[in-house]
Image (cartoon, rainbow, N blue to C red):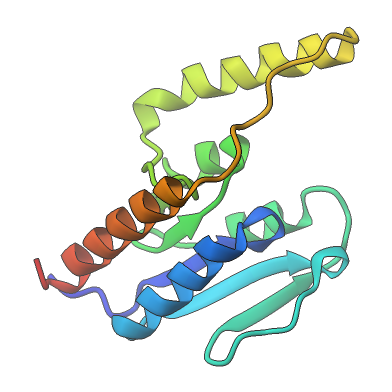
Length: 156
């Protein structure tokens, strides 16, 4: 079941460089288009063969672009639970840079935990941030991402 029209969309503002490199490598391997959507505030030198889409630096601009341009069957990579909660029901296969696939049945819990953490921060309390990005995160992401691309392209 080949889906050669699938596009890979990346929330580039918060994408760790090792993950960015892994996405580029695997998209080249499977001949898929990768689109890194970033705000002008996060501009970095583009990589050959990858399309960089620059949006305004306004809050949520990258998210709005991804919501409006991704389609069912596309692939997205984002750390943003809110964005993932919109893309997943739309039929976009959505990955977190730490290598897990967002699932619709997990969204309510993830969004609630994000809400509680935000409420704590607004009250002046400290909340635990994400753990430092590890080599094991890159390995997990790279393996899961490649496996998923293989399944989409029919190379199981």
